[in-house]
Length: 361
Image (cartoon, rainbow, N blue to C red):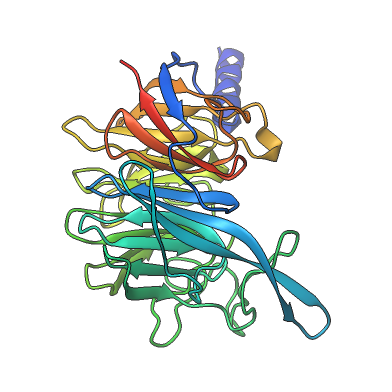
């Protein structure tokens, strides 16, 4: 009896320690329009979002190099650009051209009031623009130790003040400092909003902060939660964030291959896996909401690239797409927009495009 119990305990331990694998799920048929947007010249598409009028916003890493002389070497930096298209896919204008903070695109989102938020992992800043594209507000600041994010192959990170160990500060991570509580981001990935106008920032896919920061409708810092780890309420590489109609906050905890769910105050509610390594997530509108999650197809996961449709309780409904280059396939999905259950936009870093997807019944 003791021997049997021992093996049972070992089996449970091994199952708990095993990585969360993607669930088998039925394929969802879909139409795709990789050429829906009449795009100007640009490079990696990191972010895509829509507003209530159907206009599409694309935040892309343009790859336009410029040099900065350091003490011992020359760094080459890569700017990013924010584009707007109308509901037919026709190019309208560029927003924030040449702006100080638009350096290495991470995400773009539109809040319930129609304001446009550009999340930048290079400058560690988030810029808020009015619906007409005029500047409203900035969150975060560039670390004084680096002018902008270096190009590929060079890792940039802020240096903690003397006596502050990495992971310290409010909520874990780089401290805000005097006058900047909670606003020192470290490679922020995404932002989401609730019905009260609060903003939630997925702060930290660079390995330091690993936290969610909350700001009220006036842009004032409220609180943050989370730190590096694998326990409930801890994170390892936050890649996406979304909210549902009830105000719950869903976080793509990519390094732990799970999605965690919190209330608006940061209290842990639940978690679910079975969708591979969640990189980008969004939650649809409508009376019945669904969460969409892209499985990583980064260089170490080249066989994966599907996007999962999931009930808010974590039950997988189906999946669509696969890794690849042709229309109908996806390469390194960095952002999803799903204003409705059946109509999505997919931002592909690897394929340099924003694809319009329509799910079939």
